[in-house]
Image (tube, rainbow, N blue to C red; front, top):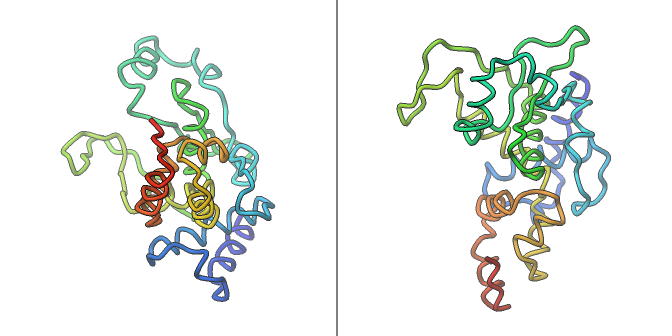
Amino acid sequence: MKICFRSILFLCLIGSMDTANLPPTNKGRQYELRGIALREFAGLRSDKELLDPFALARYARLLVVQFNAIRDLLPDDIIEHLLGAGKDKWSGGASGMPLPNGQKLIILNPTHTATRHQATLMEEISHVFLGHQPSRLAIKNYNKDGQEIARDYRPEIEEEAYSVGAAALVPYSALRDFVREGKSSRQIAKHFNVSRELVEYRLKVSRLWQDYLEVMKGNAVFDE
């Protein structure tokens, strides 16, 4: 994995890339370059090719298992909470301790859609390839809104992992071209097998949102 990570860093430092194919902000460009590197590592040659996080996960030494595989190991009240009242408070879970073969166990929320699973798994993959240290367990910790959380949450690390994963799933250059072609966020989401919310997030952080709204208005497209 260290060799792979160094390769990705090398790709990220290439200075000859056409900046016209990168977002206009410095932070956006850094995330985009890392997303492009992940796509290169996955063997993709076109910015419009579909990235499969489940195929890429094995290179990050992640073992994705169904929730039902661990269901019998959990108390009934925990299961009820995870799949009931708390279902919108978690997207996936990662084991803090590696398995004997070095893999890390990943559980995805079974109540979420397949397109949301794409983003969740891609975020976990990004954590690995970016060399992030796992969050530490904490008895008591609170986020900026005063809510108690179960781990040492580091927003800058989470932002980087999510943003790089999102850039790998929906590249800027392809997104820009689809906007110029008059594609709606729903159509773009279907193409990349991701959620509409993820596409609109990418449009906004990539500074393409106003262009997108103008195109939709010009085409009289109201994509409810």
